[in-house]
Length: 202
Image (cartoon, rainbow, N blue to C red; front, side, top):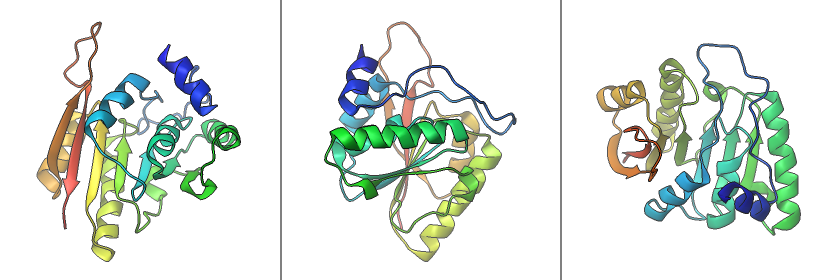
């Protein structure tokens, strides 16, 4: 029911089966963050129109459209899968037809996460376990290098956080856990069913 409501509201299509999976042990299968999880996250975590959010492994663009619609944030979806990237572009066209939003505030880039050039305005980064910890470390290094050249506060938003991601952040970086948000679910009991927010304060 939630899927139908939001897909109609945004005039997009982000449901359906995964197609064209990239064969590599470094990349995990795509799964969209549920709308229930997004509702829960943004009841407790704030974004606004000054934020620039990057979604690594954005799939069909669900998170970028949700954030842009409700908070008017700039959002960048990074997607290496060509099929999903084309779906993002088509979803953007459909979304903008029905909503008076700035085209420049929604961007999708067809590239590998570790090759994305971090913008000086990017300050929030979303990860739903899109790839191996080795690639995660490369992406975090790129973020930290960007902060060195342009100091600013940074948030990492981890959904279903992997133990490897957590271990790396807490033992090898200056990121500090600032918030834990649990997702209500009556049918599945999973201690990883939560968001962790890590902050880097310069």
